[in-house]
Amino acid sequence: MNEGYSKVFVSLDGTEQQDFVLARAIKVAANNGAKLIIGHVIDSTALESAGSYPVDLIAGLEESFRNSIAEQLQEAEENPDIPEVQVIVKAGRIRETLKDEMLDVIQPDLVMCGARGLSSIKYALLGSISTFLLRSTECDILVVK
Image (cartoon, rainbow, N blue to C red; front, side):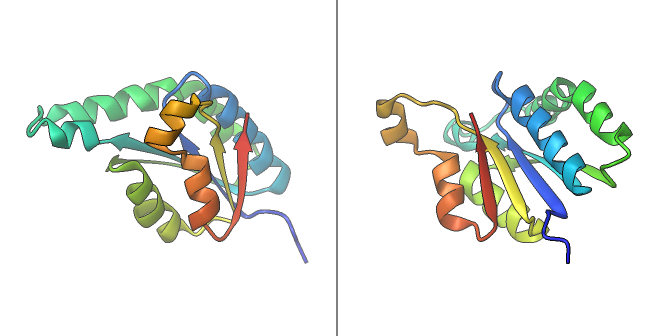
């Protein structure tokens, strides 16, 4: 019986820490011979509150994200120990989109994310995605610091 992971989902937030988090996810997926799913949610909350925004804005933000991970994505795709690599980018409210449209659909064995290191004031106002994942996800969670 294989007790490793078969589907590793890594949630990336576009910060400078995402390279480190993705590198860890690539290692974990390779060590387990697991499919790697890279997820990113473009936060549309600010865009929604503005009322309207240029139609191509979301596409531009998605392209920017994909460009930011291009080298590491290629590394993962070329790794013989990772059977499949998938990138999913969606726009929406981060928590709801991540949980309802990604994790509930994919049903990974492991979810990896970074710790943003918010100050206590920002944490009180914004909350934490890693804490949200711990409370609302049934699989293992690995928070990379």
